[in-house]
Amino acid sequence: MNKINKTGSLLRLLHYLKAQRFLLAAMMVCAAAGTLLSLYTTVLLGQAVDFIGAEGALEKMSVPLLKIAVIIPAVAGLRWLMNFCANKTAHGTVKKLRRDIFAKLGELPLKYIDAVPHGDIISRVVNDVDAVSEGLLQGFQQLFTGVVTIFGTLFFMASLDLKITLVVVVLTPLSFAVAGVISSLCFNKFREQSAIRGELTGLVNEYIGSQRLIKTFGYEETAERKFSEVNSRLNICGRRAQFYSALTNPSTRFVNSLVYAGVGIFGALNAVRAASGAFTIGDLSAFLQYANQYTKPFNEISGVITELQNALASAGRIFTFLDEKSESSDKDGKVLENCTGNVDMSDVSFSYTPEKPLIEHLDLCVKSGQHIAIVGPTGCGKTTLINLLMRFYDTTGGVISVDGIPVRELTRDSLRGNFGIVLQETWIFKGTVRDNIAYGKPDASDEEIVAAAKAAHAHGFISRLKNGYDTVISGGAELSQGQRQLLSIARVMLSPPPMLILDEATSSIDTRTEMRIQSAFNELMRGRTSFVVAHRLSTIRDADLILVMNAGHIVEQGNHKELMAKKGFYAELIMARSRS
Image (cartoon, rainbow, N blue to C red; front, side, top):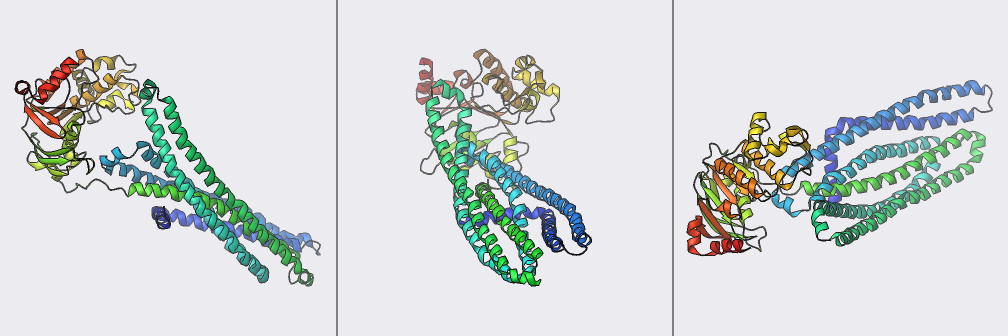
């Protein structure tokens, strides 16, 4: 991230803080009042020191000491209120940031989700937002308090002795110069650290999801080597980032010690003035305390700068994510109502990458209620065709229409609401079995849910679960792949729409159960336009129309009997499967 992006990230963070401006203003008022009152106690202590040994010392000292006794609890209360406002400000800002990130997830096209490692996205949503939160919590509070302390002590010191104050001011730029150089190094390393952390999260996420595959192929050692390589880079980068950040505090402390020594030396040279009463012992005592208080914020600010560098690096990754191009808006699109299920594809072309065409000049006309089977070798474009029908991806050429309306003119929600889909890859979320089945129809009655489960032949295994339909499942880990798929089928059975997409929907189910489900599917598909991606002959044989795809083209089409009589590509596929 260059300097412009760094500044841009800071400005955008400040924009998020705008909604918390009243709390932020209250925090600043409390910080300023508490800091100035705390600094004023040093003047009062100096006055008390001057009364030592004087006639009626106790009576004279009681006035400043009484003021100190009142100020101390007031400062404590103001600091508590400052911390409260700072926490509310940071948490409110981060809450809005998280909400925007999660909303962005719903707006991103599947092209982005498919291309970027999911672990990296998770790292931005969790780790980077946490880094911004910590930076805001520590940064704004201590930074503002430190600035008020610096200017406050300068004011009080100038009121005591202007010449010695000038010595302090002359030495101050050294602290800023040292902190500036080191903070630049810190930012670069923290930015690199955030990127590697996202890479590591993606790797771990991939390995956790592929443990069975890793163990099956004995890939553990290779996986460990890959993890170790990324982990080593993160370790090296992290150590360098911490090393640079650790340099800031001792470096500024060294410069601050020079300031304190300068005050002591010039204060000693004023011994003559002290004897004459122009510059009292109490003044010198207060001045030395101010010199110490003046240098302390530089040490705190140096630590804050480190946190802010980390926060800005993480914020840059977050804003890069938020700036990703969203799906084209369809708020002005037509709503697909009373769908009959006529689907037309005219000269459709599509490719995931421009240099590798996949589907080219595809034409297809599907009438309402037809049962379409899509077959072909792996990578021929079967699943891609499904993605285009659902508008998970948009065509790069040609037009897809439903009931005569181009899908680009329809709202995605209304289009997808007219499709029921069961994929080979099942998706189960943490919740009850009942909730999983009713995902597409949350207001479904118990009777409807049970009827859907029975139609999908899932009622039997659900009844054997500990709490039946109220059993809580965590992502489906407690269920077999076949049981997970039965629940996915039950979702569609619950509220079947006018069009169905079944992508290897029975691939993980035993043959006996498949035969039962197939009869339920046949009943479900009656009168509905259905697209079935399948390899099993039992699923293909009864289709009204079979589309045979190869290299993105429909090379043959017809029913099973017609295609077998041609003895072409389809017949070769069927014969090859029968021999295997």
